[in-house]
Image 1 (cartoon, rainbow, N blue to C red):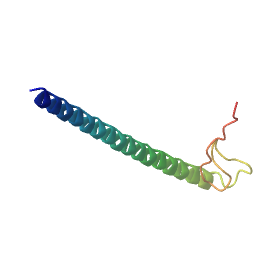
Image 2: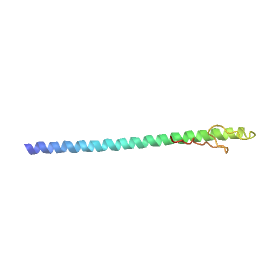
Image 3: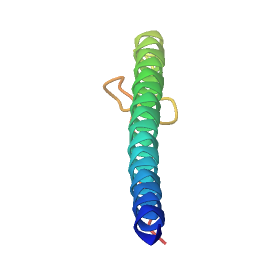
Image 4: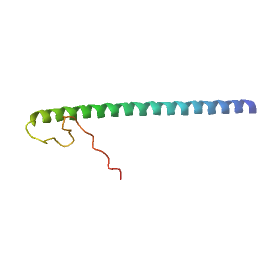
Length: 85
C-alpha cells in the first residue's frame, strides 16, 4: 500500500514540475511577444517622426539653422541622448 502512495506522490510531483516548466515557457513566450510589439511600436514612432522631420525640413529650406526639436539638419529624427545621472 505504501508503494502505491509513494508512486502517486512521485507522479503528482512530476506533473507539478511539468506544469511549472510549461508556465515558465509560456511566460517567456509572452515576454518575447511583448518585446517584439514594443519594438514595432518604437520603429513606427521613429518612422513617423522621421517623416515629420523631413516635411519640416522641406518647408524650412530657406531658414538657416531652422530644425525642429529632435530633428537633425538633414531632416531625420534624432533620439535625445541620456545625460546619465
